[in-house]
Length: 93
Image 1 (cartoon, one colour):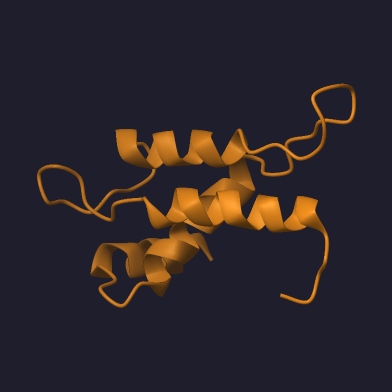
Image 2 (cartoon, rainbow, N blue to C red):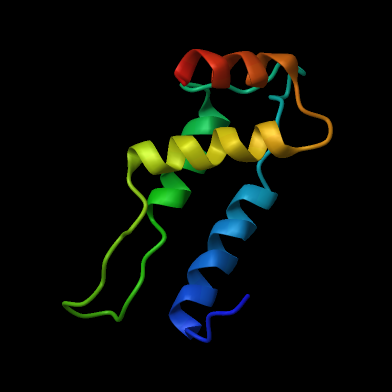
């Protein structure tokens, strides 16, 4: 990474941790999709990532739409991508 910003590095690291722990399938072996518990929990964790201090300069840069995009991009970028995730991406483009 070229940026020297510690804040930016921390943001990227936290998002990477969340996306890296995300499962592509639920406990029944079915692919997750918008509305499933795991998808929603991952989305909520992404939206809770904050930048800034603990006072008035705190901001939450990832909104609902961005979190959905990040989740789907992660799922479709994995080597074991599920066909349902590819189809969902096509439907949402």
